[in-house]
Image 1 (cartoon, helix red, strand yellow):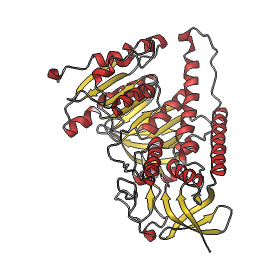
Image 2 (cartoon, helix red, strand yellow):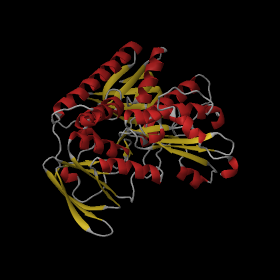
Image 3 (cartoon, one colour):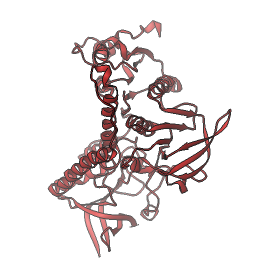
Image 4 (tube, rainbow, N blue to C red):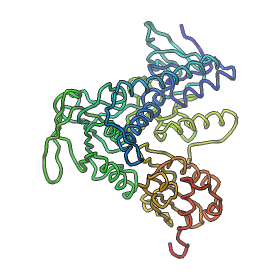
Length: 463
C-alpha cells in the first residue's frame, strides 16, 4: 500500500522542514522522512551545539585570564559533563520547538531511513520496525552531508572523532590532535585548548583556511598560536595507530623531516561529503554531479520532474542561512516568482574568538577573476570599542570597485558577524561606499570602526 501526499520531503534539514511547514500550513498533505536528527544537523550536532560549547570555552578563557580585569580567582578545572549537559539541554529545547512546529503546521514526521524505490516514491524502514511506502506529487530532498574521512592507513581502526563525537565528550582530552585546518577544526581546536587540552592541528596545505586571503589565514594562526595551539602545516600523515580516547600515534611527514605525534584523542575535520549514496537516486531519475552532490539548476530543480534538492546535498554553500534561502527560492517560485541561486551574496562566520566574518569578494578572488578593486584595511585595535574592551586582535578589510560600490568585506575581531551584516545591507542596496561613510555610527560600538575603514579607501586614481 502506498500512502500518497501532496508533498514529500526526504530529510528534515533547514530547507526541508521549512518547506514542509509552509506547505502543510497552506493545506497540502505533507510528510517528512527523517532518519535521526529532528530539524537536521544545525540544532542537533553542528551549528548550535558547537557554538554552545564554544561559549563555555570562552567563559573558561575569561576566568583563566580574570587577573587582567582586576579579578583574583583561584585556579579551577573544567567539568566537561556540565559543558555537555548545558549543550544537551539546549538541543532538547530546540528539538521540542521543532516538534511543536510539526504539530501546529500539520506536517507528518516519519522517523526512519528512506530511499527511492521509484520516481517520486520513497520506501521507509521505520525506526520502530516495519516499512512504509510513500509517494508525493512534489518531492524535496534535503539529506545534508557528513564528515569526510580521509583515506589514511590505520585511521578507521583508530575510531577517530568527528565534530559529532567531539561535542559529546564527557572528559577533557589530554592531547587532542586535529586533522584539518579549516573552519570546524579551528573552532573546536580553540575550544578544547581553552578547556585545557593540549592541541595540535595538522594541515596538508602549506597554510590554514585555503579559501581565505593569506593575511586572514596568517592572523588566525597567530591568534591561535598565542593561545598555545601547535600547528604542523604542509604535513602528510603516513599512518595512524592506537585508539582515540586511549592514545594515538601519527606518523607525519613534512618537507624537512618525518616525526611521530603522540596524542590522546584524534579529531578529523577535513571537509564534508554529501549523504547521497544508497538512497536510490538513480531509480528516481535523479542525477549526481562528479563530487556526489545532486545535480540541480538555478531554481534547485533536479533532473527528475517535480523533484527539488535543497541545502548542502545540492551543493549549496554549506551554511544554514543558505539552506533557508533555498527554501525562500522555492517558496517565491511556487507563488509565480523567478528567483534563483544566481549571484547570491553569501555571508559567513567562523566562530573562533575573535571571530572571522566575510561577505563578497576576497582579495585573492578579485585577483583571480581580474576584478579591479581598491582595498582599505585597518587593525581592529583602531576601533575605539576594541580598545575599551581590551580585545584588539585582528583587522577590518574592505574591497571597493571602480564604480564605488562595496564588493567585499572581511573582519577578524569582536562582533565581526554583526559588523559584517551592516556592510552586507549596504552591498545589497548597491550603496556607494562614500554614501555609507556619511552615516552617523553610534559610539562606542564595533560598527563605528566602519567609519575609520571607509575613510581609508584609496581614491580612484590611486587604485
